[in-house]
Image (tube, rainbow, N blue to C red; front, top):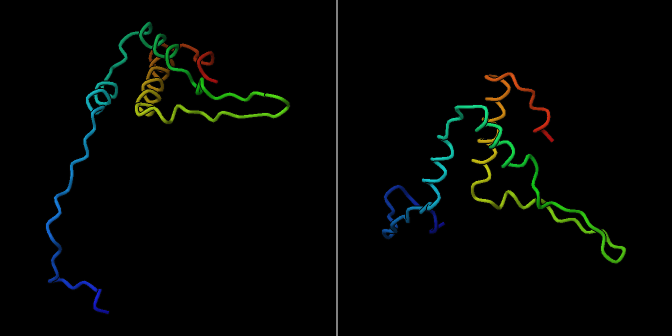
Length: 104
């Protein structure tokens, strides 16, 4: 029972280390990127794939192997997916373009 802490107990001072995010400016830039014309939206939809291009299933010597999608290891994955979604929304809502070709 001696290990219980009471309101008056104090721990030695431990400074909290600030989490350093070197990609924060790039994340902020991607999140604030505005889609302003259809050509830009089409280019974004062509450059950012709808599925991970690294996922593969292959057979070697009679055994089937599967490489899982590795895109989530990309630290900017969520920002790119959101940018692609904004481009698709711009094309369908503002321009009235059928986006079936861009959806997997």
